[in-house]
Amino acid sequence: MSVTRSSADLKWSLPERTGGAPITNYVVEKRDARRKGWQAVDTTVKELTYTVSPLNEGSLYVFRVAAENSVGVGEFCELKDSVMAKDNFSAPGPPYALSVFGISKRYVDLQWEEPKNDGGRPILKYSLEKKEKLGTRWVKCGKTSGPDCKYRVTDVIEGTEVQFQVSAENEGGTGHPSEPTEILTIEDPT
Image 1 (cartoon, rainbow, N blue to C red):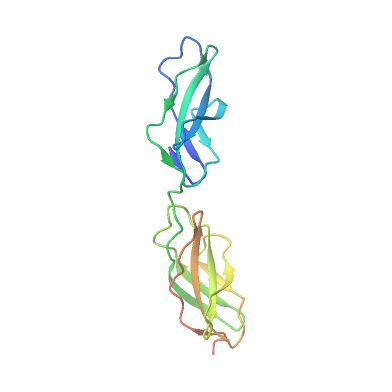
Image 2 (cartoon, helix red, strand yellow):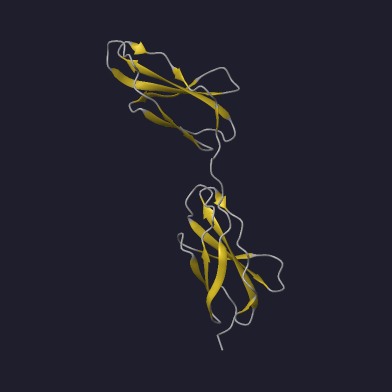
């Protein structure tokens, strides 16, 4: 069984006894652990797996499944423990070794190493930010289209002094930024 903040993937086995008639479907029910009443989720399940959704993030749930045949619905098999609807992954750690491998008055080419910790989900993309030498806040200046560890920032102004940082994104969110680059002057190499 796997659980996220909004769904739970259930799996079960065929019952040992079918009551003399073939199984036509399964009945899946859920119950908020703080309440007594069961709620039908789906009464027409044909497979031995089912994804229950939506769930309320942070709530505790119990699930149960019963087989049905032409005679009726059999005994429910109930999950022993309640489960919390929450993600078992997080935002990734910071990328590292951010460096400049090309600079001109129109762009800065940056590269970095992927985070040592991906948070339990694949990196989807990276966000880049810049800060002017005398500035106090970081401003978004680009996003990779995928998990590539390099990017050409074209949102630069000739003659300014800036530094850059990069953050990784996955299904769990945006992680902490890398260490920033040194302060760079946006100019053609001499």
